Every structure is written in structure tokens, then in C-alpha cells.
Image (cartoon, rainbow, N blue to C red; front, side):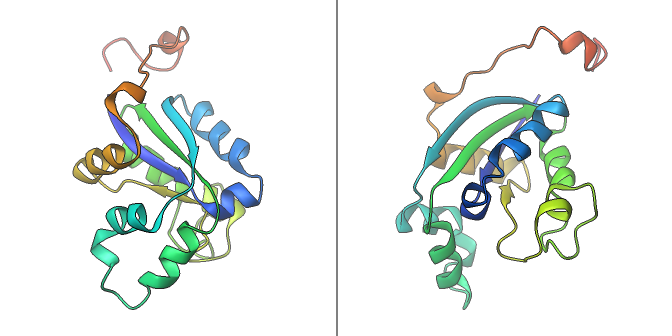
Length: 152
């Protein structure tokens, strides 16, 4: 099993799309093992987007991510990092394929509704920014035998 951090960004929260997005992850058979609504602080934004802090667009990014609450989730499943990113679609909603979350709900590069970790290292780092080990609640759904073969 693999874990990834997902953030339902301020535009997702403000547009009341949280349930629609979460239901897609659940329908795919992924497990949500942690979830909370938080207000991202400027300090947390700098930690999360550390590779962008010195870039010219960072101030707008920080203003956006701190502008309203976000919902942070830890999602677990087979190849969860790739699967979730495929479900999101291209970063720019105008370029995202229909059927993806961004393709169906976004028409912006920055206001693209959802963040997801891009690899195992960033997943571990990002989960640690938003959750303590005690806040993770892994479980085995009773319907798992109907979602994947026993040897997967």
C-alpha cells in the first residue's frame, strides 16, 4: 500500500466541491485514512511549497493557499500516488482531460482545486507537515476482496 497527501484547496472548499472530489477517491477504492480541515498559515505554506518560495509567483501562491480553509487528506491504496495524480488530470484545468477532477471542475492553472504529492519522498514529507502519526487511521474495508485480487 502507498500513501499520498491530498489537499482540497481553498477554491474546492469555497465552491462546495469537497464531497464530489472525496467521493471520486472513495469510488475508486482508495482509503481515506486521515482527514481534517485546517487554515494554512504563511509558515506552513512556505514549508509545503519550499521549492517555490524564491520564485516570482510565490506570493500569489501563498495568498491563495492561505486565503480560506483547506481539507487535508491522507489517501492509501495500490499505487496511490500515481492513481490520484491521474485522477486529478493536468495541472491547468483548461488542459485537463474530461473525466478528471480538474477537467470536470476547473478552468484555471492556479485555482485547480486539488494538490497531490508527486512522489514517495514528497508524500512522506508532506504528510508529516499536516498530520502526526497518531492522526493516521489505517483500516481494511470489508469490501476489499471485491476491489482487488488477494495477491495485489
